[in-house]
Amino acid sequence: MSADPAAKKRIAPLNLPQLLAQAEAQGWQPFHSGIDCYPIYAEGEQGPAAMLLRYQAGAHAPPHLHQGFEHILVLSGSQTDERGRHGVGTLLIQEPGSEHRLYSEDGCVVLAIWEKRVKMLAG
Image (cartoon, rainbow, N blue to C red; front, top):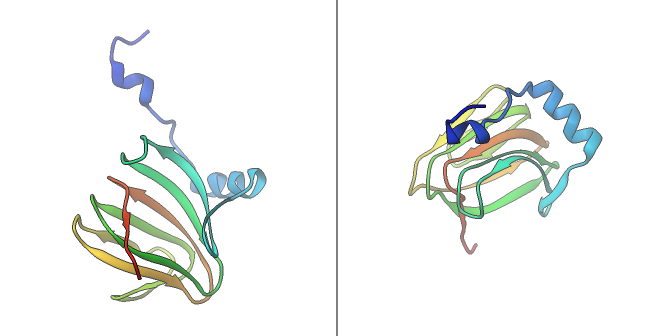
């Protein structure tokens, strides 16, 4: 048995195609209008988190403020923000203090990883 307290928190390596299949088999959860999620991990309400997000065609994420880094990897379809349209394989990185809105014209699935949870903004 390891004396390292962090050893208890280790998450097994994940295979993205298997994770997507698991999300389909176990079911997606509602996240926001037109957007479903499949949580991977979360450390409390404000800590780091990762999840798959599935946008239906035309879905919009509300404007939000990043309290820590956000990494989004587009796995299928495309996602659009103020910087343009981003297709499969694009890695988007938002810095702490940045704000943006996201939408998907044709639907998409992304892997989202947050250092800290985002703060939803009015609008």
